[in-house]
Length: 439
Image 1 (cartoon, rainbow, N blue to C red):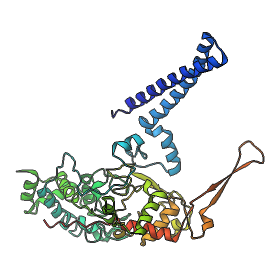
Image 2: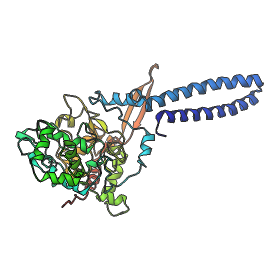
Image 3: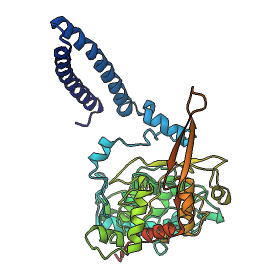
Image 4: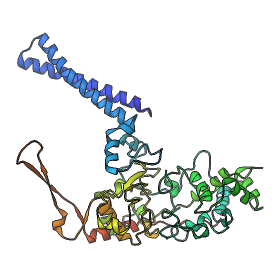
């Protein structure tokens, strides 16, 4: 029952049926108490029925907008107001995934460990010969215009799957505009690149070849010619794709993607704890894990990949950052883009302790500092060890009434230095075993 309209109709008819049953019982009881005759009971039921019918129509409209017309849905409109600028990408139709869709991806509310393998797409089945070919292509600097840059240049498998630089360096020493994400566990993501423009590893693998700042090849045909010029590749392509398989950019990308699907880092202390090893996490890491959920980090960085763009628990790939921009951290680290918050694909926190510096511009070197920035700029928290700062008073004037106000106590407004230490300890537990691929 994947059709949203079918789901809406079933919910609507169920609500109407229950409503009419309740109306019949209520009208009968009221009629007996006020001693109404048959005609009186009819009018009473009719009046109540109109109210339930109107409410059902309203509920149906909301459901229809939320499922069938998400761009007009109230939740989407509220999200847009919170996030500020409109999205530049045409395919960012959904920011929030509905609970019914979340349920279909499994029990997303419970913590899950990272699987040790990832399912490949139907049009690119996993094969050892293909992964071996992909590995050679991944490390081949001859596929850049000046023979100096390979995929591994920006995604160094010895340094966490990235280059540990604020931004990457391409041909002729050119600097990129964003920090390179790690290639480790990227196979579990539904969106690649900071702006999420690639929807698969195959899609992503083709882009750096023709990026003028990265590998700077004039077109994909030029990449194909470079591969064909190396006599080692022809037999490898045949083993990977079949006899007389031609060398094409799509097959190049498929081979690289097949290799990258093996770059998984399972069995982190977190994973071992989820699997039943109660000693895998220290007491401090457990406190950090509880805080990670309690303060709202897990709303965007959801397990097991710790990104909203994960294929196992997908809750909408994108978030606006920073939400709360009026603070010293945003200014100090220049986290705005042209003076505004931007919408980014939520990065994975797997192996986060090895993949600094942090954020899209790579401006933050220290993990604890990155946690403070997220607490203040994304969650609206205060960093303070003073218990007084953990409470805030909200004072709101009552509209239309003179000299009347409503006060609300807001709790848990601050994170202490110990909280930051605990969160850092938990994030370090997400570092898994580096892949050992010797083929």
